[in-house]
Image 1 (cartoon, rainbow, N blue to C red):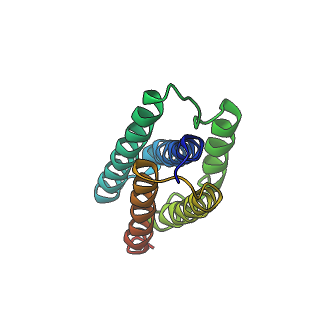
Image 2 (image 1 turned 120 degrees about the horizontal axis):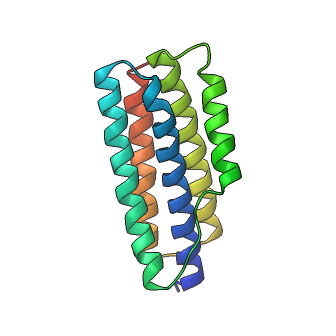
Length: 145
């Protein structure tokens, strides 16, 4: 039996994951001088935003909020990316950072899916779509290593 609270919790995690991915890409894009890789990152950002928007729409239907990144988390993420790319902005290094981020996102999403096992329907489908996107991204990013 599905519960709205489990669905909303899963939508919040989806929103959080996608916003982190978008923020990471926004921070990395100015450092990328390779046009094909830049185009790849822009496409990924668009895919994240589409999934985020779908989760947000479902949350709004239930007058639910949450899943947004706090200012402190945003500052931490951006600072970490800048620090890790200070001396190395090679495509290989950036791809490696993105692979790590996608791996963390997959872990967090699986935790949420396991913890909110009564989530079903759109929330579960969207979470699975995001998992597939992240797994595909890891495979694609390996080509840039």
